[in-house]
Structures are given as structure tokens and as C-alpha cells.
Image 1 (cartoon, rainbow, N blue to C red):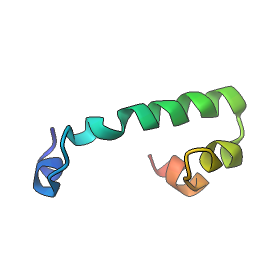
Image 2 (cartoon, rainbow, N blue to C red):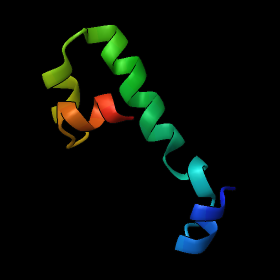
Image 3 (spheres, rainbow, N blue to C red):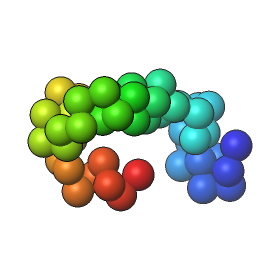
Image 4 (tube, one colour):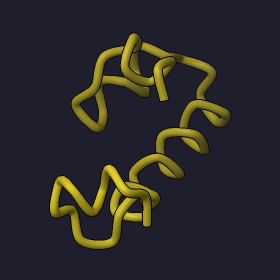
Length: 51
């Protein structure tokens, strides 16, 4: 767990969003459509590229 996660009080640290990030990565690979992939989990394409 990172120090930032501890300071923020986030249980599980960086692992908390691991499933979400994995879904988005696999979905992007499957569809090749950034707009569609971003829409499904409620993100923006900019946020997906950020992570």
C-alpha cells in the first residue's frame, strides 16, 4: 500500500480499483473504441489515457 493511500485512508490502497482498471484495459483491447469504452464505466477518454 502506498503512503498516499494510507494518508487518504483508502482501504486496500492501489488495489481498490484494480478490477475496474483491468475491465477498462481488456474492454479497450476488445472493442478498440475509446469513446464506447469510456462511456460504459462512466469515464472520459482523457481519464482512461491518464491511467
